[in-house]
Amino acid sequence: MNWWYTLVDLLPFEWAEPGSMYFMKNALLAILVISPLFGLLSTMVVEKKMSFFSDALGHSAFTGIAAGTLAGFADPSICAVALAVCFALLFTWVRSRTTLASDTVIGVFSSTAVALGIFLSTLGGRSFTRFNSLLVGDILSVTPGRIALLALILAAVLLLWWFGLNQLTLSAIHPALARSRGIHLERQDALFNCAVAVVVTLTMTWVGLLVINSLLILPGAAARNLARNLRQYTVISLLAALVSGVAGLMMSYYIGASAGASITLVLAALFCLTLALRERALS
Image 1 (tube, rainbow, N blue to C red):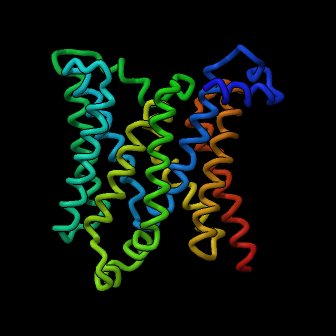
Image 2: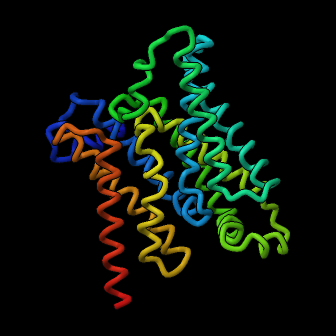
């Protein structure tokens, strides 16, 4: 991390002064790693009409953390990741074998997951308040080790996009045509859903359960207003996520607000701006 601290020392901010406020420097690096993850995944979340899927995954991750804490895990996030991946695979299996709409299946899983999480966290008269921090998140608590883990996940998602973007897009836009081209829809969905599950679970404690869903919707939604092709769609979504991530972190630091909420508000403003630009271009 010394190379990163040396680079940040060049920035004209008081928190960037050498030998001070390492938590803020770690948070900035985390944002630069997390934002591309949300930017990429957001495009497919929007195209697949799975806007509430990340919310359901957040509930399952909360259940996993509650279960891991109850079982005495030193790091309950391991249990949370495992449960979220199982949740994503089970959702994919059920969705492929029912005529119910995706939002209905998501609603079933989400309500079950959050009920189970509350049940486990309050079992035996325990207090729910110890899990309150998960609702808001704290990006300033991120550690270099977790940033390295997220960087590896970012590399894996970039490989998925490089080799499977066309298939993912075709599966989202026209499933019947994708199937006729020999694309295994269930395998594609399972791979994508697991990627979302891992990202949501590992970032939930820093972004916050209450706003994490918006970070997987707004970048793609804003990009959809302006993009004319798939490349523009991906690039604009990435830029929207990165700009909003950095701007939201700076805003949260200087006004003392939640980083996750600040990033979401910047994204919402960007969405309104792109919507206005789209309406102006059509008029």
